[in-house]
Length: 354
Image 1 (cartoon, rainbow, N blue to C red):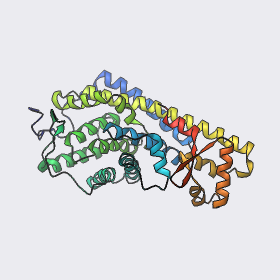
Image 2 (cartoon, rainbow, N blue to C red; image 1 turned 120 degrees about the vertical axis):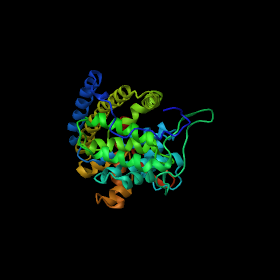
Image 3 (cartoon, rainbow, N blue to C red; image 1 turned 90 degrees about the vertical axis):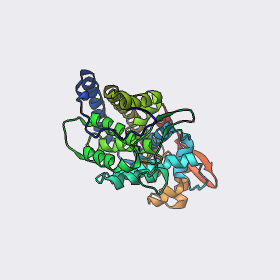
Image 4 (cartoon, rainbow, N blue to C red; image 1 turned 45 degrees about the horizontal axis):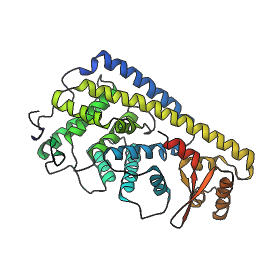
């Protein structure tokens, strides 16, 4: 690439011409990442209800991925907003919830994986009724342009190639291919906003499509956020130096570390689930049901309406159940406007622990 200020119209089509992924270093790191991810996949079925992870860990992924783009909220604000009937939610928290919605919707419709599917992810994240950009973009700040993506009139060619490569069966390992796809998508930069977040959703959905994990709960953005400067440095080095190897190694390390991290979360959630289940069975048998326990672990905050909607209890009975759990110090009362919310405080501590 001649200049950061010149549109990168020469962005090579996929697949890359060099077999950069056949190095000893990459094979070694690939083996570690595949083993860690396989262990996580094998452990996920122990969780009896997928919502126990979707509404807890996926929201943490949404928060971290958004924070990479300087969209900042707190875990407590996020979980409160997810449960409360509150229209007065700050813009950053709304964006994080939109990301969670985009990730879950993309997973549920992942058999499509065409351009319209990708555009829908972007629209859900950004809440913009736009499509592929029609204006030239420049990436940088007030002092320096660090990258200029391809011009709008060639985006369709680049995106069509990206989608064909996504679907093509070849000898490239899926974890390596995920890293290639991620670089290429960010280099194409097809949208006016939300390209990073859209690209990170495409990462995890690609892994579920390849059956490397059954739920989109891998917390990859945690690693990227912790090594944010390195992430952007290596992304740029693929562009200016064709340094694919270090980029691939970074992404494999992200999969390896976050697989182990997510596995630890899954194990801790399950152990607490069993602990609370036994505690309620022993001390409050009159309110016990497996459905109730699963509800308590399906959202960080609970409320009467959820128990009523799930036909676990009537409105008056639901209040008695939840207040009994407060007396047992399993739940903690919080107020959001006129609503009473019940915090599963031990679950919150597990999910938010770094």
